[in-house]
Image (cartoon, rainbow, N blue to C red; front, side, top):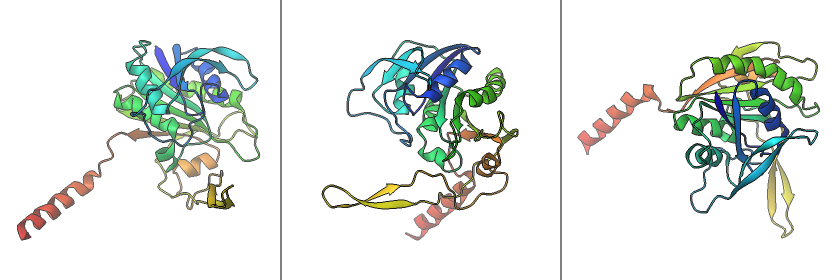
Length: 264
């Protein structure tokens, strides 16, 4: 099995290195990742400038170099586009994005560069996984425990025939008091909005600015959703589709347009 590994935290991120080590037992791993942190860039792509690439080191949180990959001066989706179409490194069997430093659950999947990279792979028709670790404000980031927890799940998922147009979104809970999650649950996305909080500041020119709070708080936590289960200590798996059409609304709007054309 040949795996393309990417992320949105940058090629030198310890989460990518941890996932790289975990995936080596499952197949050949090729890294194509952003040169710098590109968190919360969603599905941005670069069309109006050249995108430089070079060789970059894959480093653990202790600074140990595990290998090298391709660093891309672009967004996470750029990495997948270039990795699949232009670098002659494939063909690939699956694309894995992560491990992200921070959970991607609920509406966060819309903002996430980690999820967007996996979504781009699904657009190419390849099976794709996004992997993220929930990090608490006062907790240690336990990459080794997180990869030990997620590795058997990744092995199971990659041994199954994944739908090439569905991406799987996998989240590992905070592991402060345990080496493993309480269990794993397949869960729907929560549709609750974030409880946004912005802090007012003033820049050097005297303009009023607002800085987003870094915490992850939701207005609601619907039971048995990915958000509530993750906060209860479960690992979560959510299949996501590319097609966001509201099928139930198609007939309604067809009727509305037909009625409008009759009266106009």
